[in-house]
Amino acid sequence: MNVLLIGSGGREHALAWKIAASPVLAKLYCAPGNPGIASVAECVALDPAKHGEIVAFCKENAIDFVVVGPEAPLVAGIADDLRAAGISVFGPSKAAARLEGSKGFTKDLCARFNIPTGAYQRFTQAEAAKAYIRQQGAPIVVKADGLAAGKGVVVAFKVQEALDAVDACFDGAFGGAGAEVVVEEYLDGEEASFFCLCDGKTALPFGTAQDHKRVGDGDTGANTGGMGAYSPAPVMTQDIIDCTMRELIEPTMRGMAEIGAPFSGVLFAGLMITKDGPKLIEYNTRFGDPETQVLMLRLKDDVLLLLKAAADGALDQMSVRWNDDPALTVVMAARGYPAAPEKGSVIRGVDAAAENEAVEIFHAGTATKNGELVANGGRVLNVTASGKTVQEAQDAAYAAIARIDWPEGFYRHDIGWRAIAREKGDAL
Ligand code: AMP
Ligand code: GLY
Image 1 (cartoon, protein in one colour):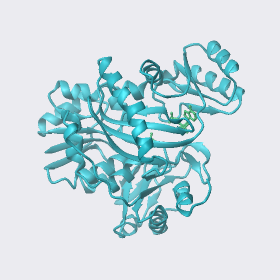
Image 2 (spheres, helix red, strand yellow):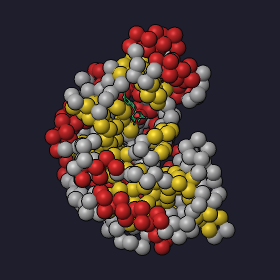
Image 3 (cartoon, helix red, strand yellow):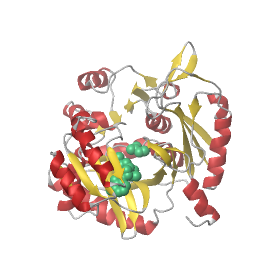
């Protein structure tokens, strides 16, 4: 099979690494890719926003299957354009990607199909949103409706913060994504990420993980795209997984089919495990980053066959096996991330740091300049390791980091703390 992978981050490096190990792969291309991906795929300088160029490349290079990594091209309809050209693709249609592209759409779907989530209202006017906030009180959550690169959510512990967030949205802080605002009930509990491969009819559970969204140790500081993750998420017991399938995922699949937008691709549910059971925080319609890095390290089966089965509507014939050993990834970010990451600093020692066979280092935001590896984004490297315990995986990841020579980089020192505390039997 000739495969084109779309994207350029750590998530795509992890997918490329695993796809490259598939016996059914003939040739893997990645657009645009990064220097890490270049070690397992041929990177091609195509812009994923230019669907016509992607389709033309697929035709010229006999591409059998396209795997789309990031959300922006999906929400812009790249899967529809590829399918219209007769090319098989892993990823939802534009209509189905509204599950990520519009928070209001998802909340309305939850209301209509009885899917557990926080109470909410949608607003297109600041005054009405503010009146609702004053009536509900804090804590309360304000979200820009559209895609805002993870920045459009304010969890407000004071009414004034929520009112300010409404103003920021309607004043254009998130461009078109903030033209509508969702105000939502604050959910209390432990967060977890849950993944399902979907083919329009069948949803196949595809692993659990926990992410660390805050930039600083002890879950402090600004929200980020994720500073590290581990899998599995201990809070996702088989009972909670079964309940999530029954009460959230299956009604979502039925609901999407019923409104004429059957969901195929990966459904990534951001969950809050509350005292009343799992509730939906949000859906993403693509793999998590950095969650994918730990999932790929644990996956025993051929990812390419699984993704192709999702695209072909054949998931009812598939199963998934995981390595029981946990995996953990630590994000190394460029100084200044998330506000203003510095680009261009030189990174040395990455290959030597990955010598331990329990360790894989995925590139997220790197480039090569004058033959050296340099930082080229906010999140730069994902140092990923497996172990018999989360503690062992964490030790291996930090030992690898200690071998990387990059003074301009930083990372959190406590990735996995919650799972490690559980391993030690500490009260959380
Ligand atoms: P999102 O971009 O929707 O993933 O939101 C970013 C983060 O805000 C989530 O990972 C949660 O930690 C938090 N969050 C979002 N919605 C809620 C909610 N309704 N209650 C509590 N926390 C929330
Ligand atoms: N790590 C969270 C995300 O991919 O959205």
